[in-house]
Length: 409
Image 1: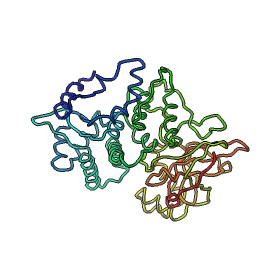
Image 2: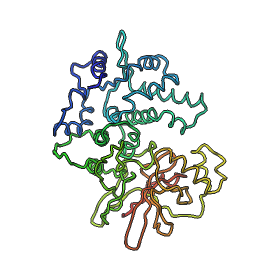
Image 3: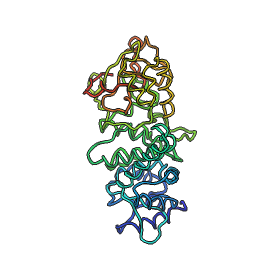
Image 4: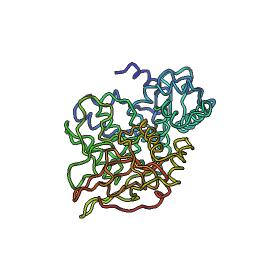
């Protein structure tokens, strides 16, 4: 048990208005099927809470006070929040998005208990980061590199604020959790399960269960196939070459199992990547079909130069444009090929090496989008054999604003 457990519970009891409190250290069984069942039902547990009280470290006491009274905090306060243990935890996402009424307090309390509502904390954090960008002349990339945990937290708070009238895609959950700290790789999957569903999960005791497969199965039941835009190797079944292969948990203690790591760690919009099975196979909905081209057209160049904050790139050749774009996405989780596939709308970066002559088409999602583009799949054809490689499209999104096409994979 952590030395913070009892002080945190005491602070929550002082600040809370309920007669009963649930805290993971005391309420999650230590071993066996009951422990597994509790982990898999965390989304349900938090959704049933009258209120969720998030206890930050004792160093945040003055930070919360400042945010309550002034609506923003200083750069040094932002650094305190950035380094807070809870802010960097893998459990952050599910604890916020599943709670209806959410408040923040500090482990340290003096006098009358002090707490700040989640909506006010969200506003204060966003305003503080905006002020820091303005005062330092920093762009979005610098902010995300300087405050990766706070950037992730801001996206999570945005998801919480819209939770009552929209769904969150699996890819957005993966992106928000990609940098989170966890000692056990299994916790990554349990935290994802809690973020994806608030429905009670039936206990089927299996100590060797494949948690990645369980997560993908839940996504499929929700008709959200955005998990295909991850860096995992594809299934070897000829009928499912588009689907990630559910690899076992790594034995080397890797922080994030590659099977569900997003190909590009960036906040995305869209409720889901819809699709369906029928007798002919699997259909992916809402896709724009692109073909390789000789050069990027003006609209794509303008979109890329604006996103990269380098207006001179609008007149650069495709090689310079491609290397600059690759450097940007490479610093946010993309580990694929540096040489892009050029399309008229922009650039496509595939996760694996792709020969131009083997490209049948590039499929880009209309349903899941980033500010600069969208995820997709490069369809490769070798005779009768099909292969699908996840990719990042960057460029003009004007063509992605319609309904798109349904494509048989």
